[in-house]
Image 1: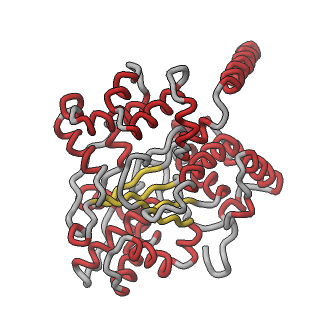
Image 2 (image 1 turned 90 degrees about the vertical axis):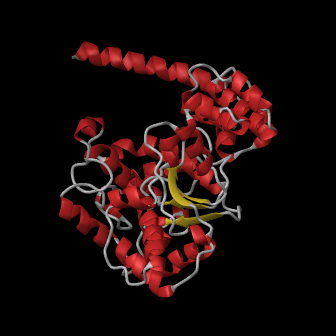
Image 3 (image 1 turned 45 degrees about the vertical axis):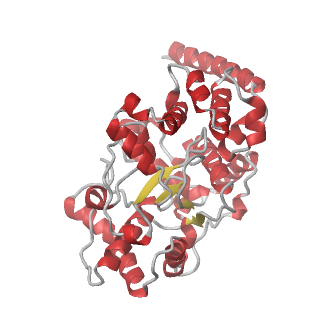
Length: 374
């Protein structure tokens, strides 16, 4: 065992040295430019010498309309992000159906329509709460007397079930959306999380609702969802403090993309904490942003049908998590400030340092619930 540990440590140190040397050779700020669409930096470093340089080349080529050149430069093993950009080129050239089939090409085009709304989020920031609200608001507009809550499978099958990136990577089928909001200029309400390597919305028109959460609660919630509630993953960490660095590194990268859209008129940015603190006001802002008719009774009814207690009751009724197979329920804890049960002062200071290394100030986030709010 001791020899195995020693070999692992030696290999890990060697890997870190190789990674550090590679990072030193990377053009400065290219990683940031990929997330924030800094076109000048991307153009300066576009090439084929690294994955990031290839991404920069594909992005700048697509922006310039050099779709054929983008395809010609793609490597055989492109990876998800490059493959997606290649599909953008194929779609614009009209060759995507021949490459991926008619159904995929049709779905790709519809998911890039200007009348698609995307709930674009940092994980564990109210993604499904927003999806349930918009679905239930559509239901309430169509039937002001609607009372029955819907389950997550119903939302997926019968209303608005498309996860854009999962469709693009072939992990989930394209689901035909309902038409409840079509008369109001919304053909679909989709979802997608941010990525750590590239802005996934750079060539996606349509309005977007971008959500984020305070970083301390994010780590706690993501730890439970991806590790503690999954038996096959539990040996990766024993406590949220064990994953503070890698999770906050990803978090910071996601916030780079989100922050770059704050002045975009087609994007509505909201924190999970603001939604929790005053859902009536904040969700009405979303309705107005989308240009939907604002009906107060429908908002109130949609909020009641989408409340965490309502969704939790449907999970308990069927006896399992609503989204994926987990130990326990997906609606584990939606409170603000749950990090206090897991982090001490030293943990918070460590998180503060990690965020500061990315230019983020922990004090800029709402980490404590206002009085009377959980």
